[in-house]
Length: 74
Image 1 (cartoon, rainbow, N blue to C red):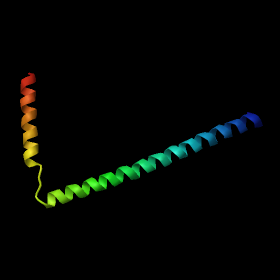
Image 2: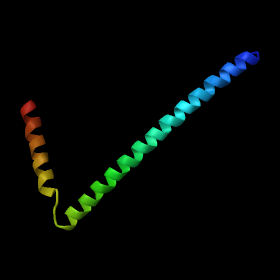
Image 3: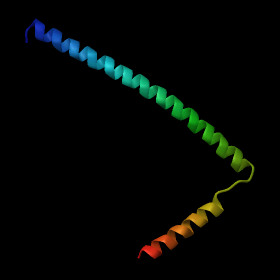
Image 4: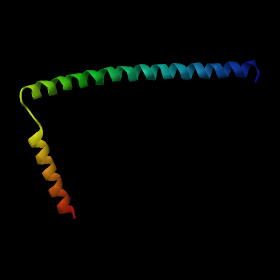
């Protein structure tokens, strides 16, 4: 490789590095946003469960529905 090829290669690498840096920044922003939503949801779950709300009945109904649905498909 001569000097011109090295320079072109370096330019391509720097451009790709810049692009990756921007993508990482966007992903970090998305991660922060998703983490905030997750934390809010976790707080809601903790609040509701602390006030006696449970999923036991809903889970049992969903399981019964799945069994009926599977039986009907056979």
